[in-house]
Image 1 (tube, rainbow, N blue to C red):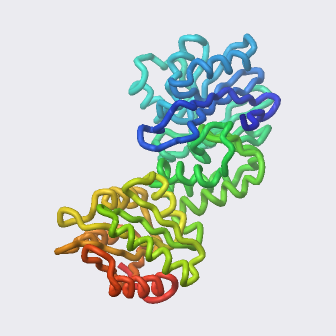
Image 2 (cartoon, rainbow, N blue to C red; image 1 turned 90 degrees about the horizontal axis):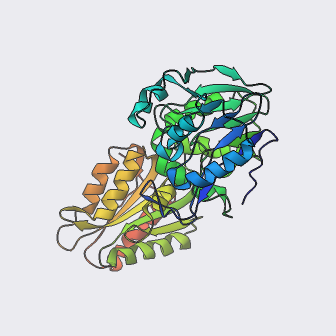
Image 3 (cartoon, helix red, strand yellow; image 1 turned 135 degrees about the vertical axis):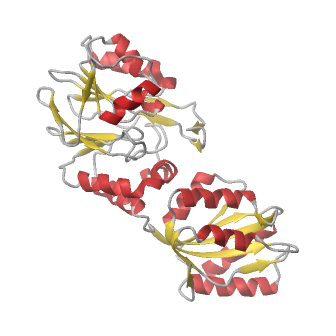
Length: 393
């Protein structure tokens, strides 16, 4: 287990789920998921968020041990998504005098999940409001659409801790030994990526605070080199490329388009590309492909024609990019079609709906199998995407 000690009075009471295979029923999580919940012990005891129902028993065990027989005075609801808010009703029944802290939208949405009357329990907070609980003072900042409308973050002023809701989260349990960047990037673009402008607004608020610890609702507690994580979020939420490289996304039916993509990868590497990553959209994790599309500054789309359009995995991939406001990239294309190639036209029509996309020529067309003229066209495409000719669309 990674370190879960926060301070003497701010305690981790969350739990790991090592049995989950698909987070939000769509994201592959080979290393499970952490559902984080926190307890501040003071003159008033405060829980910050609950957990998913699958880890309720472990969470209750952790909470009761941390409370040591004491009661709970306040529950802060940062985010109402069920993986964090499922156990609100349980706490209401267990601690009849407990008050619930949330914003106006929180309390408007609560009846969607719980058939309870919260009138006598609710404490409605607004932007910048504070609540003193003894030695600690909680300050609340609204973070609408990061990534639900009711989201807010909590800043503990005395020990300088930011409870960041889903912000700065990561896939994987707390005892997973792996780089933060990769799985946090995949998490961000999968879940929060559409809302870059809103994340930028939250980062602006956070920049006014003296933060020493970040406590997200998923993933490790961040205690060192905080600027690294903040810089990553600034890059991701402003849709700037993170690395100089070429990402090749390939959707191939019988393998001929994939063979061409592999050849292009070789050509790019021979021409000095710093990094070339190839993903088979048919067989590999789509969320990983979306992550890499945002990570690199150049992308090649290679796809078979299908039903007078484009092969379904590429169609899905482009939809996911568009949904997440993909922009500010150089893009080249390879299409394959035996008698009436249609993939290029279809892909371009989707790209035209995105912002600041630079289309790199030529469009390489394969008729069934790669030939010498195909390779010659890919040589030109490689030259141009690495620094040559292009057209803005």
